[in-house]
Length: 230
Image 1 (cartoon, rainbow, N blue to C red):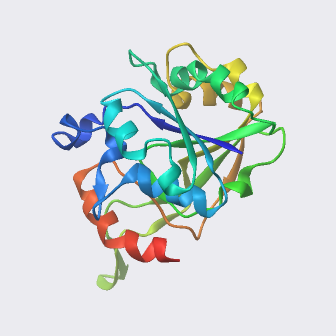
Image 2 (image 1 turned 180 degrees about the vertical axis):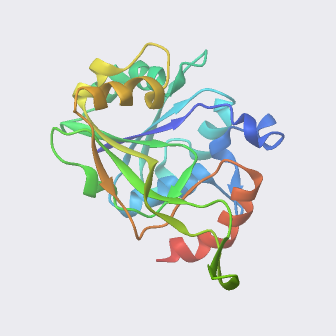
């Protein structure tokens, strides 16, 4: 099954690291995010990967090349002007369909997330589904018993609150809802919700982190080796 990696963003919040490299090429323990993603996909038998590139695209293309050194097949779709995640995916329509995609759908992942979840658990035929992970507090929590502190809990998950994990399974119908320019999150997904066409699958016990800040890089560097050993 084809997987599309959205790797064309500017990564403004991570400057100056992204001044000379695209965000997916930021290193976590000396390994670029996108390489960790490719190895994760390969672990689940996914070997046909299309990378949508824009900002400093040659850095990604040089590092991953055709994917053979990772045991996968990688091709690229380039955008010359920023199209947003939805526009970039629409721009890749012909390549996705003509790339021998005999499956009725395909995976899409954001190029700045790290996870070990099994993507095939969201691949229901004919459906459009996004993975959800628990919302974690950005602060440690203090529990009290009366006026006494009883416990400190470091950045717990918030019960019954979920966030978009940036891992999707889309049927080919998704192309009917993509903008020429604009984002999946703000244009396409709300439209699918309105038409009751978007499903969700919750992952409570998997590793997941989005790399959005310098602190995320530091914390992921402490976590990732143990996670990807498994």
